[in-house]
Image 1 (cartoon, protein in one colour):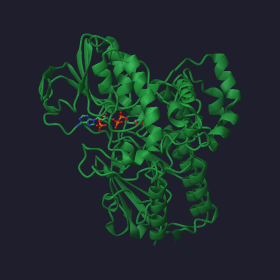
Image 2: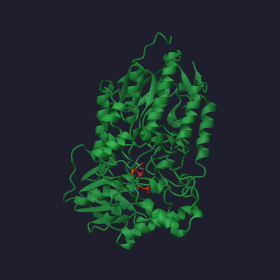
Image 3: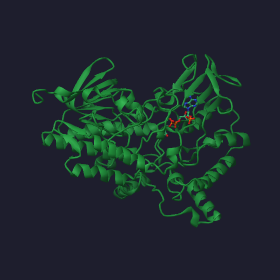
Image 4: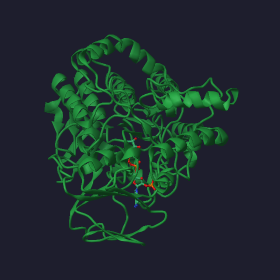
Length: 537
Ligand code: NA7
């Protein structure tokens, strides 16, 4: 019987990033036995793997973190407004020390399958070495951008020099001194890395397929005094983050219509936004910017002009100005001297729309026009995003339902937290969740999941599963929310498109695009109704 079977753990968690660490802490607080299985050699997730030069937050450090523990808020100091990767990695290690999480972590353990065992009402996980683990409940904290993809170019295996994907950057120092470096991709990652690599490389050649809009980050140091004042304001900051649409300090502007202002007034406003650190140019703009093509084209023209002003060579400037999507319709990277890097004599931009890559060669890259020789090749080619981390594990639910199959036409979830046919499994940062400020979203999702597991335990519930109706309604709701957005009409990781992965050519609705307060309220309605929207047993 169910009672007779004792799984190894009450809860297994996959991934020791921010989600997994916090989930581990919450399970400890509930006195439930927990194990976190992590593929990497330590904690950190995104901030463990992404160590490429220039890697840092695009959100204010003191807003992009956990708020649940007062001691952590009291003791931790951020040294920059937009923290660099090493600092964030230290922060996550500090959290694991503080909350004594290390004993529950098992590293270098890549979960390859997760199967529901009906007769025992438990999950059975198998790692790459064949070791198995069982638990009553399963929490996935496997990340939104964690499954890196190489370009599907012939010859990728042939290159004889050093090659790195930005998300698999080595732990030891990488020197670019005297090296001819080639980099493929111009997403948020490359836009952070390019100006830093350009400082010391002998030459840097950037291979761009789609240009991206990017605006100044305007980072600065936080001195002790300022940190003290930030600390004093934490309650106020948290209050604000809980009110805004995407949990950022900067809220979307829902009141000012672009049509109520003269071109001169708009110009003044946009100049101001362009000179403000972080996301405001993207998120605090006129209310029509991200929904109305005409309004969008006006701000797009403003940002294009900035690029023309900053890049000396007019031909290079034109190539750096996106032609196939308007400003803000993809995730806007924040940059520090990105455009100025192209003014350096040893930095060159190759437009792959004009001269596509034919192949990677043992010594470099061959385009339709030219053959390039490199000592180092950097793939800043992104991820099989959102569902990609799930695709990499063989998830099997009741009656051998496979998650890959269930989601072949796009993800289907209930609240972005659960899936029909996958009982007792909860996702932190799975598809259809409100993303925005990710640590804030994680704190909510893991909190909700933990309360749900506690409820099950306290009520003798050993089976909880999303219903067909619940999944249908939630998935339709998520699709409806995205309908008017220009961003859903553009290919990007945010619409689930990755041309390097078979089956990911079509756009899907991967994210919840309503407001975070609405998202939380929907989830809370379900919990305060004793989880009746689920099948419970
Ligand atoms: P992104 O934003 O997905 O960018 C990947 C880049 O790599 C993008 O410019 C792609 O061009 C390019 N790419 C991918 N495959 C190829 C091939 N085969 N040939 C040429 N170019 C290619 O990933 P990032 O790591 O930069 O950023 C991910 C997120 O992390 C970011 O949005 C932040 O939220 C944090 P494409 O646009 O597909 O033409």
